[in-house]
Image (cartoon, rainbow, N blue to C red):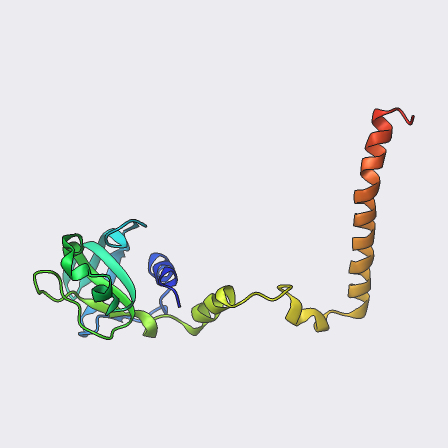
Length: 174
């Protein structure tokens, strides 16, 4: 799993439809605006708007695979991260604190991402086959296979003949 996948899930809100989001402390979460992905140093999403319980918050969102990455990246020492209103993680393995010691609300999204989204992600990141349809070749009928190969033959033949026709046209068949 890559952090960029979590960015994608957050940005496109690929959470299970109809399932209410909650922080790890059981506070309801409603996303008004996901924010703008920065791609720079500092928090990942700038100027998000989120309801935590009944309170509307505006600020930044930071995303990690594990909540402990907050400390691995030393965000607790960086004042740019004091404006983070929500920490989005795949796995919450430790509470996260700002530089002033206040706890940042955290949402663990692994329970909110559908199996279908995960399966599609894994198809994209797993090592590629030689041919993308390699596992389906045996299901192609013999006649379809023969017609396809015949069509390829004529397309390649045309690719070889066309330059000759162009050269003859330029030299007036000379």
